[in-house]
Image 1 (cartoon, rainbow, N blue to C red):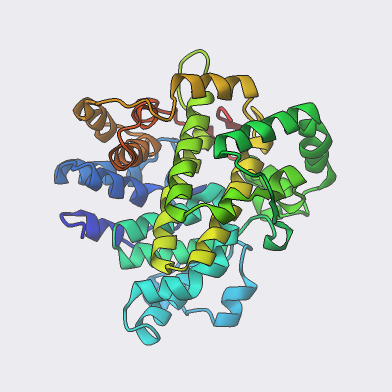
Image 2 (tube, rainbow, N blue to C red):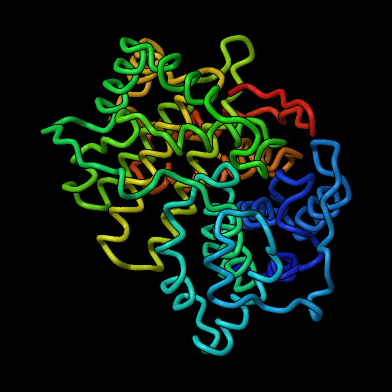
Length: 398
């Protein structure tokens, strides 16, 4: 159980889950990571005070609209009706709190088992921050952050329709071979133009109008709504391999992609792809609570489809075969590294940019878990830059 000032901060109810209408409130994610990296209590409180005073974007968090004691919980029907409409987050939280207290006797695991399975297909919403918030709340054993995360997943629900997911028989193909094949398919069939660009152009601002100010999230909503078979054809290894093997393969694969897409000039990591790693960490914790193999396999299939769609839709496009193969050569599966973590951890703890704090925490944990693979250590050293995000323009490397 996390102690020190962390639990009180994770239980803080002063701020909305989003600000400026579409930016996720990351404050609590960093607090979890700082605590797990053994930052001092003073540093944890200092980071919270700085971020809640003014975010690194130069924008302020949005205080909640209503005092919590005045919030009326929504009904189960309203919970379902409001899914993905980005309305009434406080009422959804209040409903989760009521459910926790009255139906599950304060047992957050039971609450997650009841509500998370139907929400997981929408994990692409808010650029994966719903599944991050829920999973990291579970990691921290924070009841209130878990409630917030369930409500956020419902609030921002967005994803590929599960009925469109189909298993593609791929024999003994490895996960990275799947990614290489999909990269080749996207390039050879010019899917960036014939699918991504064409789909983006089909919809006006009446489509997911709540996402229009969010820029990339709006574009992603379009390709998730009309996914190409390159997205929905899911490799059979996600059905057949043992779950513990799939988790390791996916962590290694997303890390390979993160390293393959480093900026050619400054070496910084890709801001969007970093979310693939931290959201997978969140998803693993959610699935661990649900504890059902078939639900987990479906969740991982949905995750894989989301990652392919996100990469294909991004400004930089799907990573090239050449870039991926170069990283595979540099970081083979059996390349280990006896990393000196103290300087990396200290650098992470000192960061203003919360994505880098989370990156160090997750990469260090994965390095420890998976035989000191050098790719995880390299990822931990590959910080991203704070994007320039505003209501009319967004400048970040995607």
